[in-house]
Length: 250
Image 1 (cartoon, rainbow, N blue to C red):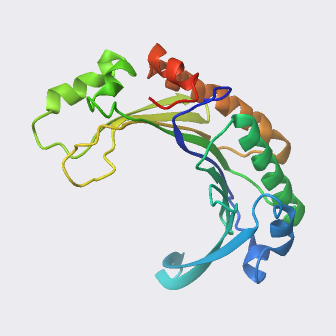
Image 2 (image 1 turned 180 degrees about the vertical axis):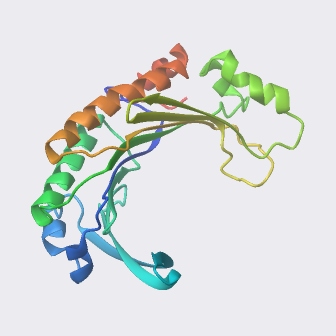
């Protein structure tokens, strides 16, 4: 997923969650110092208001009340890069992925900006997700058959002709607090219509649900990057590497 002229990454996302909400962020009009630190990468700022219902258990029973939350988005000029921040989580997203090294630099700057603005922030979940999409050959509509192992093609052959609208397989691997979730198949961009576009999805999500110190964030990110390579390699053939080694799209 890196060091090639071409890749099939549709989206890559880094995310951290906070066990304790950043109350200072709620009190501010907007995260000024955080925004200034990222200005050279992400000059566009947006606010998104969300409303929901919060439930609490009290001595008098369960109580509910309406809550409002603001999520701040910071985007590059072409909107291909985005950082999102609210009191409960932070994410870094890239839709025109070039290399892990470039993405890592943005993550590092974002995490540094977070802790510079909110020094008491704690993390209880960290994740890295790659959404890869292998397009079919325009001529045959089934070019993916040369790009993935035969065992992954079998479900399509088994269910074809039954007005399938989506066909996905998910497996999860546990390693202590680390979890790797891989979803493969035909997600169907036209869902819930019948499946006609046979773009093949390889969605890889590596995350940990444990306390993470600031100084460990980039180390875990590097580890997760290596972990994400394994299922991608297992779910693809030499034809994918061949296409990634050329600038021209077949």
